[in-house]
Length: 430
Ligand SMILES: Nc1ncnc2c1ncn2[C@@H]1O[C@H](COP(=O)(O)OP(=O)(O)OP(=O)(O)O)[C@@H](O)[C@H]1O
Ligand SMILES: O=C(O)[C@@H](O)C(=O)CO
Image (cartoon, rainbow, N blue to C red; front, side):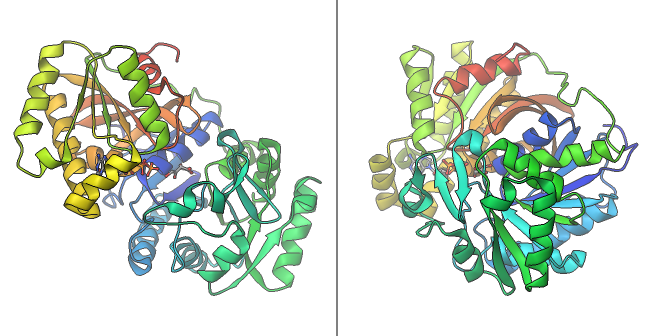
């Protein structure tokens, strides 16, 4: 990799791996060359030239103090690289607990940046997440009725995000109402000034459309820190372009490698279950991992690798199961142990597949993607063109060799995503 020639403009901290990739995808679509790094790199790490750098953490559900200290370390690294503005990325469904980690991390970053006010906006209309009068909707349902109220780690039982964020913040949380957002950037700047004057340190921003997010982005040009889902980041590249700081590049160009192809699915979401079903319906080779067999030792991992080698074509190896079956495995093995067994197995299988010549890999699930990328020793990803909203093609290095990767959040992607992603990783139009 070549040494950075230019200083990045935007430094981002993401609270999970696939969320980081979602944000990076949005920035590339806005014309920013973007690199994603896995964890906080060494101070002198070499990176490709980039306009934006996204540090991917795994801090969504760790204890708040840990999330704060990791996020501050990421901020210090990004400041040292010369970034001018900072972005804290969390989930478009505002995944958090009463203790955090969105409020504590946002406030710690504000303090470190001497930033007395920032916005919080998870809206992502392209994937059905909209915000009105501080209430977050997922498609046609309130967040608290969308299924997210049952999330095992971050159950979201209240759709009023001013209330949710206030419960995890020390400073006063306000609302930037849709009425002001609809009037454009000047009205938003005036509303921000009023919120500041009335002692607010954070405000949830309403947004129903990409146009609203561009308005918010434009009004955030002077804020040292912006927080949200990937949606609100779509307005930021234009600020740098207007200021003459962002040059025109083909930000999405990637030199994709030739080689074998595979899909690994460890997400148990509804969307991933549908994607696995579509692959099976197409009669393509697929092998299901049994968590109970994994608990007995590594034989089924070796068997999966031997099976994949025999197929001589793209394979799917998956632990994805319907919710009732996942619950049964969890009852038998414990929630954490079941998750760890599957993550470890898919990480080892990824490594084995790479050794067998796989150079194009699709991974489904945020935790699963984290486990796979770590097992492969990938340290940074160059971000390419979008496959589906929130999921770009990416390029990493494993032991000095290129590997094309698509890391998919559980709930993202069309039903035929796996085949579509493999086509795009092979350099074809998705
Ligand atoms: N059959 C199974 N039984 C028990 N646990 C499973 C099974 N399949 C997958 N898991 C575990 O469920 C978890 C799924 O989390 P992951 O983050 O990968 O997917 P997700 O929650 O759908 O995605 P995202 O976080 O991007 O929304 C992982 O820890 C995985 O190992
Ligand atoms: O914002 C989203 O929905 C995703 O990028 C994500 O973070 C899912 O875990």
